[in-house]
Length: 258
Image 1: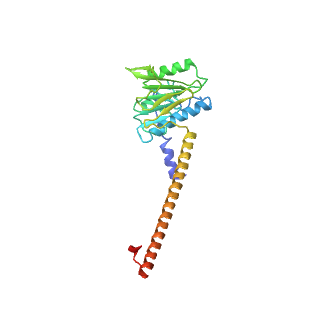
Image 2 (image 1 turned 135 degrees about the vertical axis):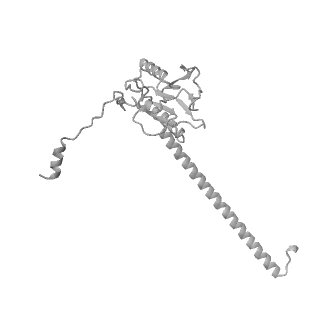
């Protein structure tokens, strides 16, 4: 038997170190098993609001925007949770997250949340969500119903999340965006006056702008060519006049006599 094996046998079985289980270490699931949206209209609005906020805060590394992300406000409790259709958190860096676990985020709660209703949402469910957001520190809460074209909002005032009475033309204190509700739909405007657009609307706008830029380029080129043509004609006329003047001088005719 090799000496190395004999040495191992003399040492006996290896010592096993067990890592003690910590009761406060629990799993925070990244999915609640529910779909992001119940229909295409709700989904499109969730994406429009979430992506509109992403674009608006693209140059702010300290603003985190998410859509349909589970939020756990209480450390050690994976039962208390909500998944706003869109939420904005000021004071937290951008980046991927499987869930927003508040105690790992310097205990900063989302300041602004949005919900887009579908026919499947019940009054009891929405009342429960309002209570959740009211309890866990949300500053602004907005609900849009794209089927019935209704829009509601709540603002935290003196520690309470109170309903905004005059929501038409309302400007979010935190986000700076303005809401305009018409008979057809909700319009959201950024502080610079630009409207929140869907991906299709953004693409159509880009294509239209590209076509307009191309049209203006062609017009500039045509104007440049016309200017060059006019300049060439003027040079030709000038040259002909100079040649005529030279011939008259050779014939002894003074230009002053003409």
